[in-house]
Amino acid sequence: MIPQIDKEIGISVYTTKSSSVQGKIKQNENDFLVREVLSEKIISSFENTSGHAVYLLKKSGIDTNHTLIDIENRYGLVLKSLGLKDANAKTEQYVYTYKKLNSLKQIQGKKYSAQRIGFVEKPISKKDMLGNFFEIKVSGLTDSLSSFTKDEKILNFFGYQRFGSKRPITHLVGKSIITGDYEKALDYLLTFSSKHDSERNNQFRKLISERKSESEIIELLPYSMDIERNLLKQLSKDKDPKNAIRSIPLALRRFYIQAYQSFLFNKTLSLAYEFEEELFLPTTDDVCFDKNSILGKFENDPNQRLAIPLIGHSYYKKSRFDYYIKKILDDELLTPKDFFIKDFQEISVDGGFRNASINYLNLNINENLIKFQLSRGSYATIVLREILKPENPLDCGF
Image (cartoon, rainbow, N blue to C red):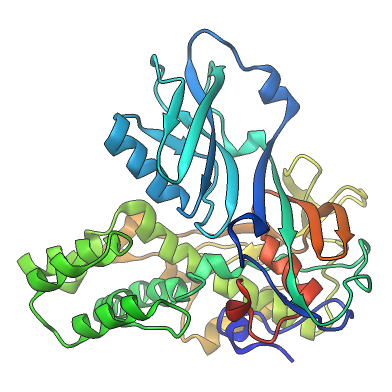
């Protein structure tokens, strides 16, 4: 049976036949390890003298965004990351200075440390990243993991983190912005509570929903509720919901739209699979990624992997998946043109492509320890979802 939370984020199928073994992840700090993997080419280009500094950032109990904000506040050093890592894991990732400067060798915080490992002539980019290596300890299994093999095929759904995990609302905020319902977007951000969120956070959201004085609530909010605090500060000066949305940092506003785009992609994959479309091997006229992640038409190359359109105002419509996309948009009462957002043109999305399936490497399962490597952009929780098939993913640490 598909969990309710999966359906809420657009996932309505399993593609593997192994039975449910339940299990929990992230029960302890060291249970979930993530390490970014860079290409040998970029690593060999590191220099010891000058350029854009590259750091290996190790952290636990804090997400990437809050780590980089803290480093800037403490040390005055602005760092960029190749990807976001959440707080509920022990992670190692590469961050870099966007400007060439003489930077610190070592950075230390309560929940993180960063060691300078070299300099590069040009800033590193996501193209330099091969993916992520995972080492995950599972507790509370009801059966052995041995029935799952490295030959299993898994669809490349966007994972729970994309939608907010404990409070899966990012796609709902995105849709509300797209439809121009800014009051509803604010309600999701400020007052929507979840049984998976902390009791304290839910109490604060209740206070906000009761329309108490913004200034009084602002003083009470914890550090982790920085988005809510900034929105309340804006609303205390100006009650216009559109201006409140505009006060959200650009990258975060764009993320909400992309989260809704991700929800629609999950729906497309699910529906196509239910209609028995071939999703693991490309066929004639399909759009594909080659081994270098370059898009092109199907050429009967075994290294090509099927790509599926991401919906936007000018997404690619000449694919066998357009029937499903149109059906989903009809159900959502939207058209492609709606993704050009007149009030917020800077966060409009035109479309794109994403791999249909996950390419996981070096899978190793030893009793309750699971190790594997994923390409950039794929989610470990989606692999684990197929391996464990938990009844309540969020209760199990997902």
